[in-house]
Amino acid sequence: MPPHEEYDTRQMSDEEIKKAFVRCFISKEGKIVLSYLRRQTIERCLGADAEDRHLRDLEGQRRLVRQIEQLSDIN
Image (cartoon, rainbow, N blue to C red):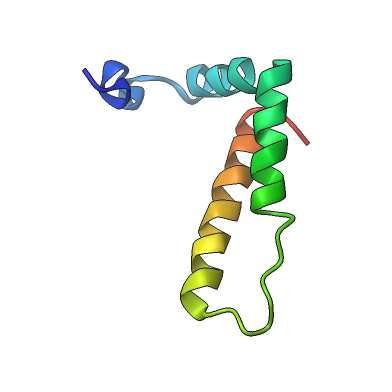
């Protein structure tokens, strides 16, 4: 069974999901991963000649990293 099918998060409370994020990213390794994701997305700047599709793609990535930060109470 693929990992995304192992747990039906639709049946979980928001609090259960939030706790899972906190447990995942509270460790040293989790903080390293989140720091890397932040550096690759939120702290990344594209040049003035960047295509619209690249800007949209990066903004979606930034949104996901911000959501992870929110759910894990980091930053």
